[in-house]
Length: 478
Image 1: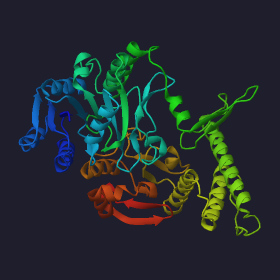
Image 2: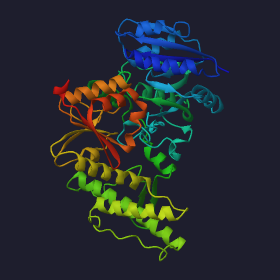
Image 3: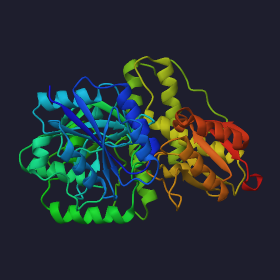
Image 4: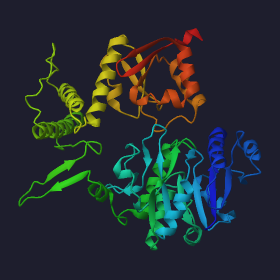
C-alpha cells in the first residue's frame, strides 16, 4: 500500500486548523500517512498550536504569506509519500476518507482523486468540478442533498477540488505542481486540466466524505477572483470542453424529447434549475415565475396519474377551506402541496414533493414573519442565499451570514465565536430580529454556544409556523 503525505496549508485561523488536526489524529486512516502542515506566514497563535502537535505532525514554516499554491508546493517538496493529499484546514474528515481515495486511485489507476465535501447542514459543497457552457469551472450539484443519486456516484471528471485531493507525486512534480500565477483560486482546476492533457485520469470518489466550511480558511477576495479568472481564461479559453450538460443528462436531471420538427421537448428536474422560457421577458422575476409554473404542472401531472392508477378518485373528498388560496403561483403551490400531502397520508405508494415542501416552508416563514414582527422591522434570516426568504415589502431583511451589502456570504462561520461576533456586529448596526427557518434549525445544534448566546441576548423568542424568531435586545442595552 503506497504511503500518503497529507499536506495542509494554513494561514491564521488556528481554531480551524485545530479542529481539522483533532479529527485526523483521533481517527487515523489505515494507509501509512504523514501529516505536513505548512504555516503560510500566520500571525495568530497558529505556530504555538502547531508546536503542541509536534509529536504527530511535521511543520513547514513560510515567513511570508505566499498563498495556496506556494504553500502546497512547499509542502510537497518535503513530502515522502508516493501520493500527495492536499487538504484544507477548514475540513473535518470522516471515517475512511483517505482509505477510499487510495482505493479508487489504485483500482482505476487514477492520478487525481477528489472527495465528496458536505456543508455542515448535510448538503453538497463538492461532488466534482465541471466546465460550464460559459467556459468557467464550477462545483457540480453544490447545494444538493448529500444522498441524492447524482452525487453518490464515483466517476471520471475533468477536475476536482484541492480542498481534498489525492495526486500521484510523480505526476504532480512532472507538471511543476500548482501554478503560482493563481492566488487562492482555480489552482486545482488548472492542475487537473494540465494533467488531463498528458493523459492522466481524474476521478471523484463519493465514498470519501468530509465536512467543509467553504472558504473559511482564506476567505474570498474579489480582486483575487477577478485575477484568477483572467489567468484561467488566458490559458484555457477555447481549449477546454464544456461538460456540465453531459452530467445533467447522464444523471436523468435533463431529458430531451425529439420529434421530426422543432421545438424540442425538455424536462428539467426542479432541484436542478428553473426555466427561462423567454429571453425577452421583462424581468428575472417573470422568468422565475415561468419556471415555477412548469414545476407545478409536472407535480400536478404526477399526482393526477397516481390518483388515476390507484383509483383514489371518489374515495375521499378534500375538506374545503373557508378561504381558498389566492390564484397566484404561490397560492397554487400551496394548494398542490396540501393535496399531495393528503394523498401521501392515505396511500403508501406516493410521496409528496420535497421541492413543493420547501416552497411551502418559504411561504410559511414569510407569513410567520409578517404575523409576529412589526412593519419596518430590521430582520436577519439564516439562509443559504434564497432571496425569497428576505423579500418583504414593508420590512428590511438580509441574509445571515452576510456580506457588507446584505447579500449571502457564501460560507458558514468557522465556529460559534465567529457566528456570535458576526451577529453582534449586525445587531449593533440595527438588526432587531433573527429568523431561523426549520431548514436552518441545525445551526442551533451545530453552533451550540451561538444558540445559547442568541437565547440569552433575546428579550423574546417567538415560535411561529416553520421557523423560530428571536427578538434581539437593542444595542443600547449593552
